[in-house]
View 1 (cartoon, helix red, strand yellow):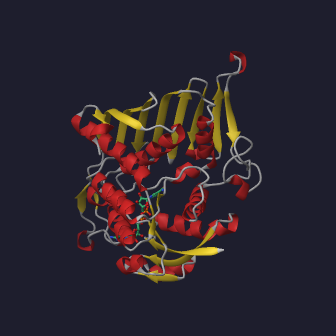
View 2 (cartoon, protein in one colour):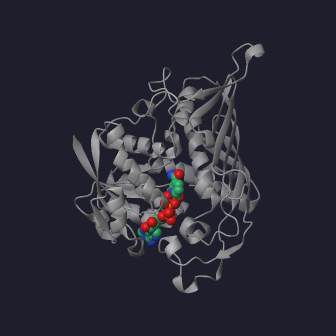
View 3 (spheres, helix red, strand yellow):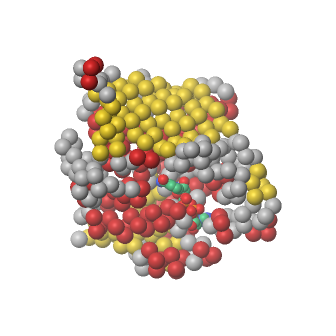
Length: 396
Ligand SMILES: NC(=O)c1ccc[n+]([C@@H]2O[C@H](COP(=O)([O-])OP(=O)(O)OC[C@H]3O[C@@H](n4cnc5c(N)ncnc54)[C@H](O)[C@@H]3O)[C@@H](O)[C@H]2O)c1
């Protein structure tokens, strides 16, 4: 089997999740290319050597600029805070590497545009880790809509609600515009914009209105250790301003005529990771909630009214649609459920397929695709600022 050497830049939350994915993928799947966990980059204070030993990377580095240029590396995996996606991705692309980047593609639309242009000019393959597409239930929803199971789509309702960000949480990079670009919006709305574009197969053409709010306006400065090197050690213990949103809600129109609502929040008490959609069509409807990620709810409006009702589909039966559910043939028997990390392993498998010239199991976002999601994020922020509608035509 051919191999590809992977370098991963960053070693935080996503660093752990991606290390697990690269380590597991060739055990559960038979990818056409085998990933070699060549080198992981981390800040010196994070002890990248210890991380490498724990997670199975062959080498550790504290110099990403050198690492992404190394002739030994074929794929660069970017798991840094958002403001570093563009510099790392562009340097890797300039060195002719394929790039897999965490979401949102960038902190700003301008950075995202530059990443798309760099990738096009260099003719390398790019990927963005919108991992929720690779939950079997979400991939099934995509397949069902494509097969016409719910007919023409009228309503899309999506929420991504969390409740971790009370006053006790310090000023992490996620609360600063210069590092993150936006708050709950880029973090959470990015996922549900991508997921609904994927499931409906349609593009958002207008943001009709939006509200952005920051409830907690300043937070304690955490110092460097808690921020992966981004904090100002000298200022630790003082307070600093929050420069991103805690919540963004917006209304939108899809090109297929459907109307939609989106809501992202970090202080929606009672919702820990409630990533949901409900899609109502002329022949049926679909509902997903990541807190019950193995299930997809389906309502078949073609059945006689007397027996219409929501069906809970346990998405754990492996096989090709319509006989089974994507990815799970490579995991466990029926109803031996899977979890958060499996979406990343499934994505690693599809990245390797695309790199080998094969089709992914279901469509996988590249930089150009993720740029479309970034345009919607930007349009919603503009709509909130202007208190009015924004056409996607005007956001390029
Ligand atoms: N797909 C998902 O569901 C999901 C979930 C969480 C985070 N993310 C995304 O993953 C990315 C990383 O988030 P995280 O939660 O892992 O963050 P984190 O704070 O846990 O880790 C960030 C890592 O980036 C590295 N880093 C920090 N500053 C850097 C710099 N200047 N140069 C190079 N490297 C630097 C550090 O090594 C650190 O380990 C973000 O873009 C975030 O939006 C995606």
